[in-house]
Image (cartoon, rainbow, N blue to C red; front, side):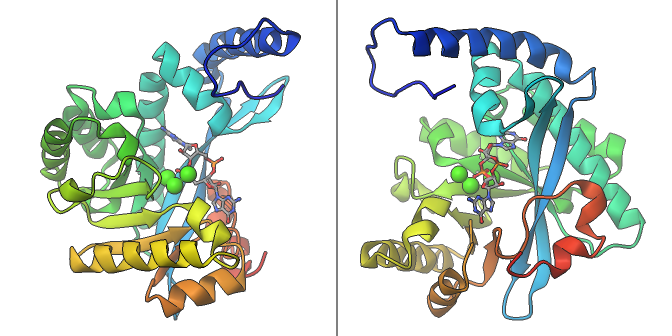
Length: 279
Ligand code: C2E
Ligand code: CA
Ligand code: CA
Ligand code: CA
């Protein structure tokens, strides 16, 4: 099944039909996925160089569909957003990630924060901070070990977004700005956001080795983050070359296949994830 195009009007086509059927089917299956235990959270480590210190883990949702196999989040999260099922799924991921992180902490693993991706709908949920507070209390996770990843595209209304973020910050959790550079640049607001970290989007990292433009953009993002007192992490690191360029630009934090793919919770501290330099 091919993805639907972005260009507005489309004539009826078998492909469109297939896409529609996919959506309808996925929507019905998603409603049952949680109770059937088909959803899982994988974890991808984040490191600080040069000593390759573990500084965090990102929680990434996985759906093992009984018939279709593994469906990537990019494929079903938009449908979950459209249908509102994302609220229940988002809640589930948050609880699961907090619970798992608490289990690791209690088992004596290095205490690092877990980063959970927030959806647009969750971000605008009026009682979000109460829900998160409840999850933190129920799972027993210390709030400083939860980071929420927010994207620029969620922040259509700057004043509202700042208010929401300030309410979340009061819980003692951390906020980061994901996919930075891809959205509408709310550059003028950036300094007003209670954000501790910028995530340089993979699309820039991907082209770093070929393009001087990308280097210039990344240099600017890094300088901006530091001047605002924020940390900066680059995602999607796949090669030694990308790591070198970013290190020259004074970026210290990294996440990507070069270090480790996202792995099931049982594998994260099992050695494999930690030793898989260069996969
Ligand atoms: P994202 O938040 O930008 O997450 C990073 C994506 O890049 C993940 O894809 C990750 O597996 C992938 N990745 C990490 N390192 C590399 C690399 O070196 N090379 C390449 N090619 N890819 C890399 P994934 O897990 O398929 O997730 C895709 C997107 O789905 C995420 O993008 C995020 O927007 C969304 N997503 C995932 N889990 C959740 C969730 O629990 N809630 C919400 N709302 N969205 C989620
Ligand atoms: Ca993310
Ligand atoms: Ca990202
Ligand atoms: Ca992305």
